[in-house]
Image (cartoon, rainbow, N blue to C red; front, side):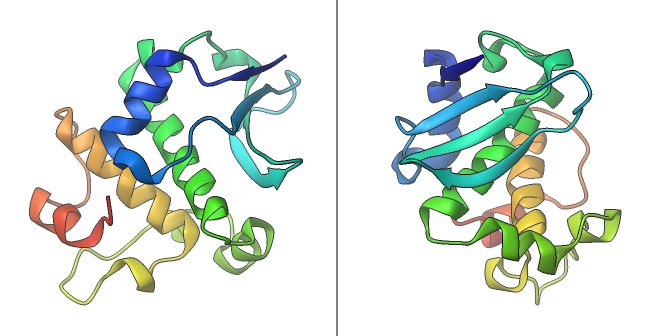
Length: 149
């Protein structure tokens, strides 16, 4: 199944990214049951694709649990990166896929440009979670300083 973002998902995206994310070109692709992780392969055929696991598929992910909404935000960061011209395949190969690829330092020297694509997505995801009361690695001042949105 392929679908556009639901109106609630568009609203959720706008609450985080404002006007800098083009949502009209985003499509969600339901993955076969054996694939269990969401991912963004980049832009193909004029669209940005979010591949989403069947086990947690929904008609409107913005109405689901907070962690699922946060995963959508994480994947939308990758959509935004692709829209900015980042080659996600090369960037992912550079970043890696182990826990260290997603971890980031909350110190004063950390800024957006020093983070790899997974760290950038995690920072935005964690800022979203913090705004909704979850415990995350950084504080509000860190996320306000580092996040470009």
